[in-house]
Image 1 (tube, rainbow, N blue to C red):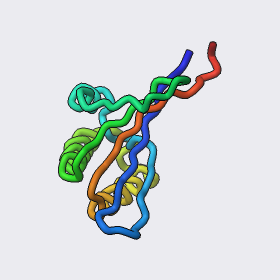
Image 2: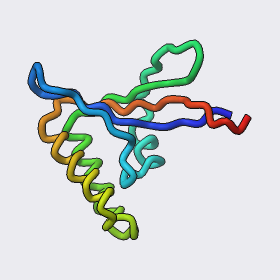
Image 3: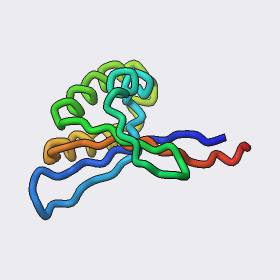
Image 4: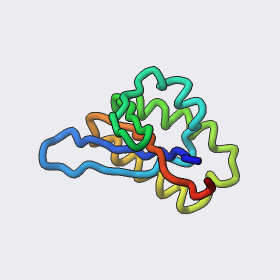
Length: 112
């Protein structure tokens, strides 16, 4: 049975600057995210899997990140070094981005 994963692509605000890709942040509430933004789904048209993207402005991504960080602060994982580093990295990248794309893609779980 296929499963889904998400990752984030950021588009830089200046030509020639690198984009950035990361897995969907641990602290982002996946269910709430898709409840809020699912109407923006754009199907990639793959004949082999059900993949789609969602486009967000940087302001929307920053607001979502802030909201989720506040809620995640109660989670014991919120003080782990790898989480704090990922939070810092995302905040830094969002400051130089013009758009954020969330890709949801189907992957084979191996449990068929």
